Length: 115
Image (tube, rainbow, N blue to C red; front, side, top):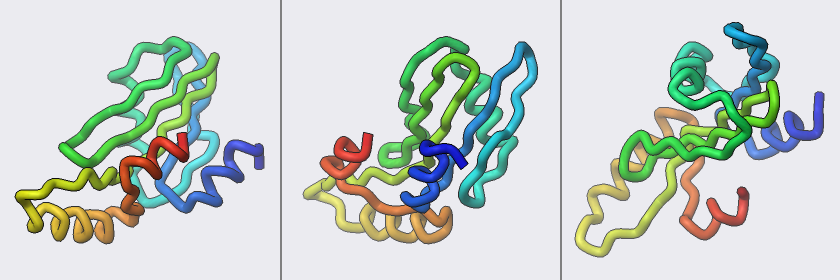
C-alpha cells in the first residue's frame, strides 16, 4: 500500500483511487461501501487536469476530488455539519444519513484541518 492509501484507510472514510489511462479508468484502491460506478460517474463529470475540486451533492454532503497526472482520488461523500440556528431537525437527518452511508460527521473546522 502507498502512503496515500494508508492515510485514507486510517481515516476510515469512503474513498477511491483511480488510474486514468486514455479513455480507461482503472480502480487501484477502494475504501468504504460506495459503488465504484458512482465514483466513476463523478470522475467523468470532472475535467482531466491537475486540480482539486469539491463536489457538493446536497447542502451538507461533499466529495473531495484530487487529480494529479494519471492518478485521481475521490474522498467522500463526507457530511460537513454546518450549524444552523433555526433548524434542529436537519441535524437529526444528518446523523441518520451518516449512519446509512457509513460516513463520519465533521465540523467545518475539522474538514479544513484534514485537507
